[in-house]
Image (cartoon, rainbow, N blue to C red; front, top):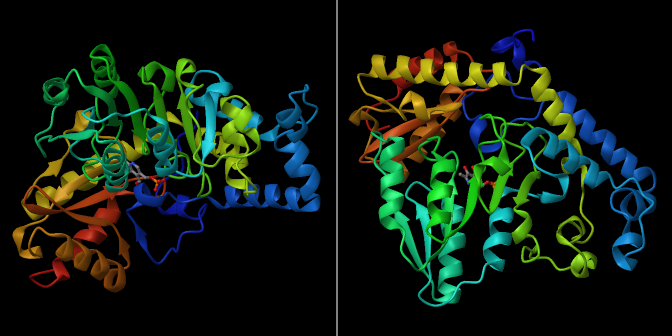
Length: 402
Ligand SMILES: Cc1ncc(COP(=O)(O)O)c(C=O)c1O
């Protein structure tokens, strides 16, 4: 496999504004022009004959409603086959959802929680996921146990020990981040899933960042459910995520929107949820192929090496530190800012982020963590170590107080 074309030469493949330094692939991804074109082709195919496309080609609605053998090409299921070929398991275990939040909500809404049951969540979870679980606990009388994890001195063994100590005989459900959002930490999710299941808790993995960032065999993680975004590190158009459900959980796993597929099986229930634009889902196979064409493992290695180099350089120049440790780093990493950038709170973080964007044309995440302000840098195909040099020069011009 030839090495991928990276850095500014790769930026031309994207619709990204070339006058900006984009160091935040992690939040929303970025879709290459070739994949926007592929999505447009799907939209045009649909609009040439919406009736045929939506009722016979995307999903064979006659089959869904009557149970008779289908005749249509079942395009959504073809897309699920490409997902299974990339991430393991059977196509019938995968359904598409618009985003990770939707996938997590579907699982949590259908999970039977009773008063006094306990739900386990890792300390650095994504805030929308925390909100979902708090709402489920308020509705059912279950109790949320958030496992605080150290930062930046985090280690696999420490995470496993903390989760082991937090599990109780009443813990029914554990939500485990594969790669955390705020601390960009790759968690020992296979070990954690085994531990939780051995102790009687069902496991839902929040893999929002993992597909495309890590080598990934989803069934081998050993969870009950795994949700992952396609729009982040796989670069599919926005509105595409996958939900994998272990076969023994599929009967009880339902979308929140009840539609024509309600009386059918797991995939029919999710594949038919009213009239939607399916073009992002249908572009996922193209996106998987695009990532492979860009080097696959070599692309991931470029991102990891660049994230380590950028944050290492910044930490040395700023006289601070970077995290997580290299063994828990994927394609994003954080660097701590010196105290002069302001108090460690969300207001100061937002002020700095806006200033870097508006005055220096740099998109990067700033956030308060463990009593300090940190920057989270993503490294994708179009990033190179020099991007961190631009960031450093911008930081030197930020006045005291951020
Ligand atoms: C760990 C984690 N979980 C969930 C989400 C939510 O993803 P989405 O916005 O696609 O619903 C994110 C988004 O960044 C995330 O980082």
